[in-house]
Image 1 (cartoon, rainbow, N blue to C red):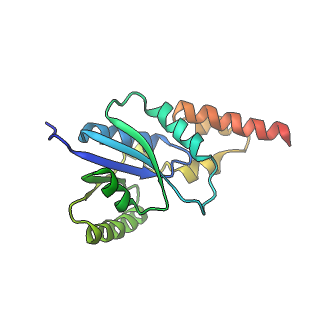
Image 2: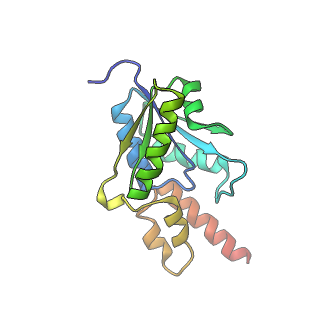
Length: 172
């Protein structure tokens, strides 16, 4: 049974959103009264998709979850964003030992900054544990990429990837 007012933030670049991200969102939606899924936008970073595209794909791929809110933040630490929206928890995914080491350090720094916000780690199931946005982007291009990539991203994202790739191919 959920306690009233339990809110969390799950943040990422979602460039693009993957089935692993959706799994995390599904888990977060079942654990918390409210889950804010926030795109952290770094103006100095190059993204494959615009912020608006990423927001749209995130909304399209998560509309089945009633207790989530889609948002974005820029030029702000995640802990500061969590404070600004009144989140009690930060939800993070850990796929590998490398992820764990990075997330452990960030959890400790965030704990130094605000002991009232708890970081929760979730490990995705084996079938999607290796899926990442970088991996997906790296698979696009060679003949037959669509057959592979379609299993790693939600339909709305796959449709956008196909449209973007084939639109670029025709214009070259």
